[in-house]
Image 1 (cartoon, one colour):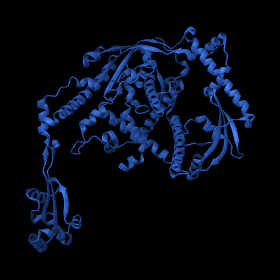
Image 2 (tube, rainbow, N blue to C red; image 1 turned 90 degrees about the vertical axis):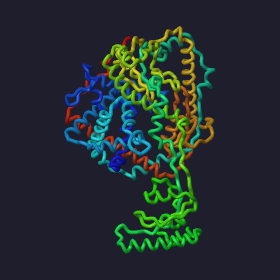
Image 3 (cartoon, one colour; image 1 turned 120 degrees about the vertical axis):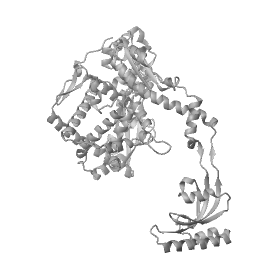
Image 4 (cartoon, rainbow, N blue to C red; image 1 turned 90 degrees about the horizontal axis):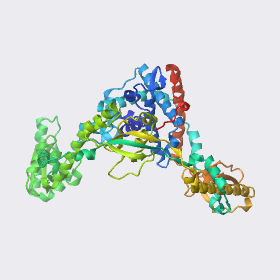
Length: 640
């Protein structure tokens, strides 16, 4: 089974994704079934409804994932589009189709397979007690912190393993082409030496003159650039482990009881160092063989007794222990539990370094033993570990309570969607307000997570359903061990700022635009007479590693130019950054690392696999029937 898991490392990434993102984007559609209610249908697959609320929830999670990948500089409005929502819906449809096909094929996985898959998740694999056994309570707490119980989580993993079976045979039909991969890698490894002439807008600002009429016209033609962002006044509640910790007190008596019950955790076991000479006895030895081995050991013991200094010499000569004979019989330091009982009892019964005992009988044969070192055990005093014990017990108590409270929090905010009174009364949480909240997250405060600093929370808050219905959000994890829900009280859509307020800003934007236009025209004119261009120092560009200070557009243009006749030049419009003329001087064929060929083969395999899967999904659509009901153009604007 472990080999199977290794072969399906992509599956493990998805299962790990389950632990990190509990809303299951494109995973476990049935997990959203409790939210369907009477919402409009977004699609139907084999007659089964995918609701608009399911689509909205999945789309929020997908946008949050994209933002996490692309960075905080990406505007949420660039991602939260009807086109993106259609892509999310397509993913949900695919998921439902695969589930239907799995059931049609009667595919199943065993409990053991589910268990092994879960144990491969790093966060779960790390849940071990000091004695090496699996910490079941810690596992339950980990899953509960994601808003599930273990049965729900294990059902999700089982479902994903089954879906992996559906796609396994399809994806496995792709045949790698090393020749194509090598050619692609060779092209990627090539470098090009170029010279660049830049035409910067800043150099043309002095030539720009604008009139008030032009500024006002620019404002009217670009009102989207002068938008005041949408805002909402909200209520919210936060459930956090830190807040619970303030109510959990550990008494000195509880700490002492834990200390007494776990003395081994606060003790260092005594160790002894010894050397031995072993005369082995086979497990099926006859009485005569036993007597012969014992006689030989007794003879060696007499030699050692006559001259103890020869112990190491005799061990190298006569000991039949291959692990220690070459070291003069030295076994190093060990605890009592590391050796078989008769041997350990003998060694730990010896009191003086240099003492020699034997022969003594164990399951391995006869031993002559010399004590060569003593390390006494130690015990940490209770007072020195009291604070650590209290902290540990408090954390365990908080996690146990948090597991129960997360379930109650999640259910209560959903079951009473129009108010936080029920969750306030049940969990004693403070209902807070915030005004003029926008989609842009606030700066996070270390140690004090706020919903207004959480992208997932704000994405959910400004989702269509939230603004329209003004219901409580489903519980959202905004930080480790911190959950929040919010509801919109009032909403102000984005609006254009009056010209009088942004006149200065509009004027500068128009000047910058005209300067960029002058820079572009100057560059285009200069390109007609390359001899007049003032190029910078030669640069070596690569497609695999960025060059500091060089625009990706310049790199793309350089590698798009023909190299049949060099030098070869072309212009690149850099928008607000001006214009560049790129001249390729020569090509440099670099060595092609094996890793690059492997990466090219992987990318090629992924492309081919995706194409085959797409065709397979299209066939499933024909088999089961799919009807897309969500129409982006039919969506109406949300008013506050």
